[in-house]
Length: 222
Image 1 (cartoon, rainbow, N blue to C red):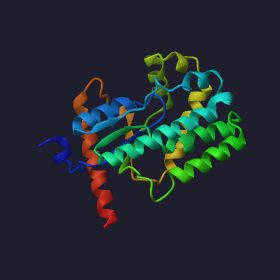
Image 2: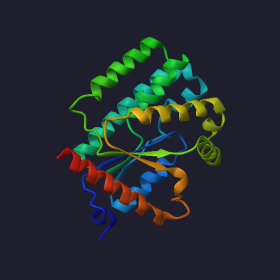
Image 3: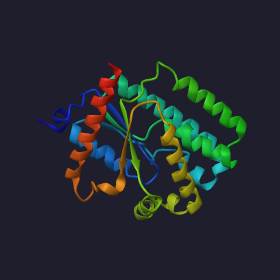
């Protein structure tokens, strides 16, 4: 019996991994996909035409970047559900508006008219009964010091050149966002309690928690 069957996780489940930059979303996505024999939906950073420009000039490119993300994530969400589920998804579409776009509007790096246009488009596309929401959102939580050390360790140039204040602000906003998120059930996981790089077998504990949460959610819907 594989782990998916052992812990009663439906073969058509869609599980989204959320968390701030450096929380370990890609590692968790791949580990869960391997454990459950699911497909992955990964954030393609390398092919994003706006990301480098954005880090060079937040104010000029924030709106373009958010529209690009919205388009890509919406198409990917449709693809996942049209395929029939069985996916682990790296980052949710909800973070784009709830955290990133709002942060740039609040800090003045996105024009208020652009922000209004973006949020109206987001609501029309996503916040409707017709949009396929995931079965579960796994939120990777952890102290800012741990997050920052991981960002520094992986050494992406554009991230190394980003001011520390940006990462502090981002972490704070994630904490606020997840406390009010209600689009689907949420499972919080403390990233200091496991290390999938050193011990891949720790993924079973996480799979067990996912199974318990999905089964509880199914019971509450009855």
